[in-house]
Amino acid sequence: MLNIMEKEKLFEVLNDWNYWNKELPEYYSRNFYENNILKYDLTDEITVLKGIRRCGKSTLLINHIKELLKQKIDIKKILFVNFEDPRLGVDLDTKIFEQILDIYKEYVNNSTEIYLFLDEIQNVSGWEKWVRTVYELKKVKKIYITGSSSKLLSREFGTALSGRYLDMNIYPASFLEFLEFNGENNITKQKLITEKIKYKKYFNQYLEIGGFPKVILTNEDFLRKKEILNYFETIILKDIVARYNLKNYDNVRKVAIYLISNISRLTNLNKLKTSLNISYELIDKYFEYLRETYLVYELNKYDDSLKKQYSSNKKVYVSDISFAKEIGFSFSENIGRIYENLVFIELKKRNKEIYYHKDNYECDFVVKEGLKIAQAIQVTKSLGDIDTKKREIKGLLDALKTYNLSHGLILTED
Image 1: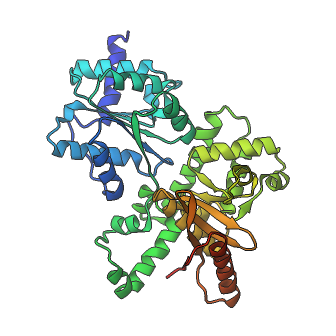
Image 2: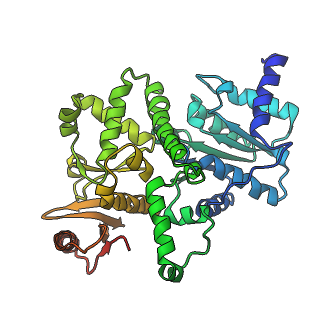
Image 3: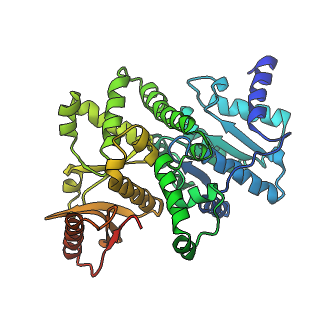
């Protein structure tokens, strides 16, 4: 049992994160995600938002609280807990949930009609069993969860919470969202053509700073760069080195920088071992950790044999192009790879099952629908260079022939 002083301190933390006695902040809307959260509310399943740090998960929760208020839900029925707050302590376990609920009921709302928002829940050990129990016993009205670790979330969901949740992957802002953040709404194809110079300028800005909401809303280039570097270091230090009790921070960082510097290229971990002088086992482990934090993604070569898929070289993409700009390679020399990364993230956002193709020639993306490949896509800055044009067309035609497709798509800058 907590003593009176401990209760007051914990309530102070809860009061800071909640809006029982203060106005909700104004945030930009992200309609694609917010509309889906509203649809999820039509069920009583747990709503789960997953994605890299600082991509806007917490903001989406705050914006959804506003939607609940529009539905005449009493603000005191809403409890928001941010488990990144150091005042809650370290090595958190499920006791913290009971303490929080007890204090909330004592000070704010002593009923079961509670809308429970649990932010960055992977910081609490054993959280999934507690959430399942609360859900099944209907101790609260609705549960919303965010997390920044794909392994921790998927593992627990797959066992304790199977069939009890609806999840959604959250990404940094797309170019369309970037325009909305800059006050450009109701974008049409006609606008993009008639005001091409203006939108090309915006697109170049987007390529420079990426899609992290806070970075977009920061005006100073120096501060933007600091923010992006801080995100990167926090992911390495907190989400990987500290969480897995690793001793060599520098090696994790080296692997991350190497992968970010080689986005869209075929990657062989054995070659990486030679380049960085780190054992294959460690590189493989670090690569897994980096994927778990959503910092990077891997893309497999398509093959009917799963064994061959997994044994083939991977292609790696980064969650936000700002990392490539500030942490990776020489930006201007590799703009085509940046475009390819943008297309990869957009295909992921659309929940497409994607691979790369490589037989006689390489095709950037093939999209699987059902049991067969249904689309082939190449990405390049332009087709102005004759050698580039030949290479892109050869790769596309190779994929079309292999998968018996009648047409394909080459995406260029315009």
